[in-house]
Image 1 (tube, rainbow, N blue to C red):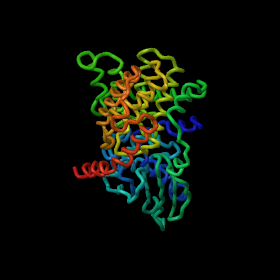
Image 2 (spheres, rainbow, N blue to C red):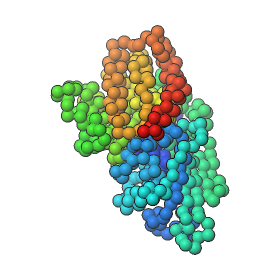
Image 3 (cartoon, rainbow, N blue to C red):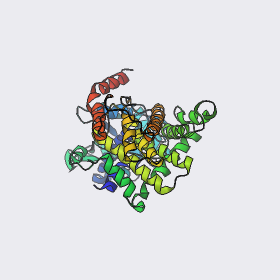
Image 4 (cartoon, rainbow, N blue to C red):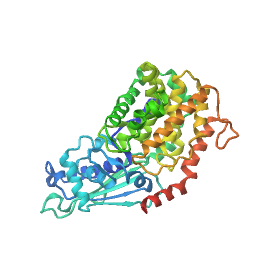
Length: 439
């Protein structure tokens, strides 16, 4: 099992909520294809002037998670804005950081395209939960002498940054297998025991890269605390630590993690270190662990091993749940952070399994009703549950297998959790989207 490859594939920087960012990435790629195939029609600076027509077809879950979330640096929300930004200034080579460095002129031009009705979003008739098809055309290609309007398409499937097909003028340029096909090959099929063994035994120099979690996600937390982002959940927790929450580790972890989510969901221009395609999940899987290290002066090697464990547990659970579902991702991510906390407090593999079971018996069923600033409240709740689950696990207290979805085998418990989120809550997912669209 090549855990390094898995971690590099699933733990990476992402600027903004990854569902609208996936749209921006697909549109940016399609726009670049036009530039590559029509160099005479696309002079320098052309993208800031072109009257793009942008049609984006997305899966219902992409729509759900892109409707109300801030697009970094724009002061605007929603998929149409992300799509317009992708056309005007997106760089597909940057992956999930496709909108890094957007200028004020680009933001204003994107606003004009959306206001002019040049961006069209629809729901794709597909079974895949993560799907984006972006079609970009330019009347005249920026030139009055153009005989045919250049049109290009890019398709993303299964992973937020996995472009599986591109085309120009109706001709396929590239086609590759989907992320589902890769997952079916069993590349990510490992166990909690294997994740634990790797986290404890890997040479520190091989895993030190994971400390970038601290660099990126802690910067977002400080940004959330210093600014007035979203609902200011993290700020409220930290500012009420004397009267309400207490100046202890739990409130510190809740405040820092929620603050990072506040900033990210409200459009901060700082990237998050994501996990399994989710910035909020990357924040929740790491910041509680980082907060513990800060509070109790944990050295870098122990912190790195804790972060490897927490990230791998979250990736493992997501393998059964899928990248998008009706189950809130903070359930998965906070389960990972609970394991990291157990390790930092001196617990062993058995206590890690107890923590996973305690989490599965506690907040399984928390629904995802789209990405938005309110996610910071769910993040704070997940962190609270993670700390509780870790404390109980360290006392060898575990929800028994007679309770609900819990099984003696931790792997069976994880599969039960995945089945609920991926199959059992499909009707819930549809109903949530119907409610959101009818408001």
